[in-house]
Image (tube, rainbow, N blue to C red):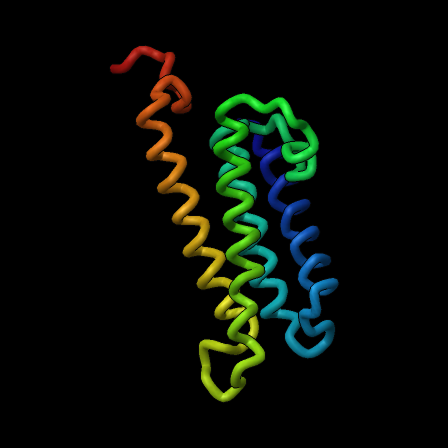
Length: 144
């Protein structure tokens, strides 16, 4: 796997997540470390499915979602990335309820729901892999 392209992909996704978090209302000056942590976690969780299923074919998520005629591995990567982003968004529901509780502070609830939905996406994709075993990476190589 190309390490340079992998690093570019993770950095691009982290920067995109940081900008998106700021546009969705994350604190700009007061909680920079927390927003950066959220962005790194989201960037890595969105990069891993693309690297696993597609390699370094897609440098950015937009390239994956822009094409409508995807193969089955790309569809599975779309499912995981979509669930991860949905989890990051749905975690914001509990933030305005009460700031006195530690787990409702930015970005703890977002990171927990993002990780939860990412795991759900991976479980769904591996369940589908049992139906399509030829999609597993390196499945066409001979086993030792």
